[in-house]
Length: 285
Image 1 (cartoon, helix red, strand yellow):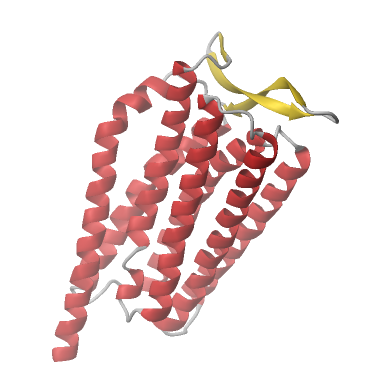
Image 2 (cartoon, rainbow, N blue to C red):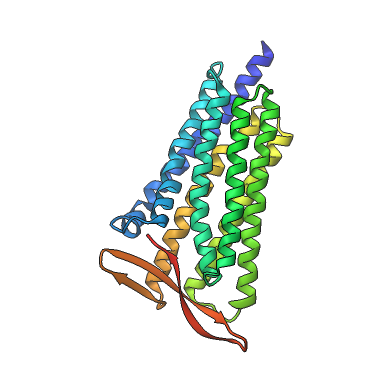
């Protein structure tokens, strides 16, 4: 009886954390809604806008389902919890993919739209997505116990850590190798916002991995909701900040009928020195 009461108490803490995560996400919606109306609404539908909508609104459903799972676990749990968690995990993965699409677009533009960089990032992203979906399917169909399933999930977050640290390394290398003399507001925004986003997402994934390995159940799932919120908030705020920086600066801004595209002026490395500028398409919302 004492063990059951202790387990219920642990799930209550998890439910409180998920409730706080949902409240934080809704609060961010309220204070950034005007930016969304200004920079997103009325623009043409494209890959970047679709990615933004998914990364901003799908986490609402994901965090809500995490909260429901935590609350119901204090009352004895829900039937077929493995399948339920697989569904949440799939939603979480889709939200992560959408945020990463915007991240890849910024990194690709930062690299001067180099084709090899895009191919490499796309290949790694595809492998990561496929591994994530396979692991979620295995966990949903597996008859193994909960700790074993949690260990499988830790592999997903380990892949996320490697992925974001890899992209962050590429961004830092490009910044100090080719953009050392360039300090325009737009280039600084692309660089710093990207690095901060990748560092925060990698750190939250690392915390989850440590929690899965070290913390007792159900505390191992304590940080699922907060990570979803961090990724969604940072992804949308980076895009808003990029648009606002471009609007305030004297870098290139081109408006077309029924569409608006933003470009960044970036230096191109020649055989002698960095001596000219090229327009790099960085967002299409």
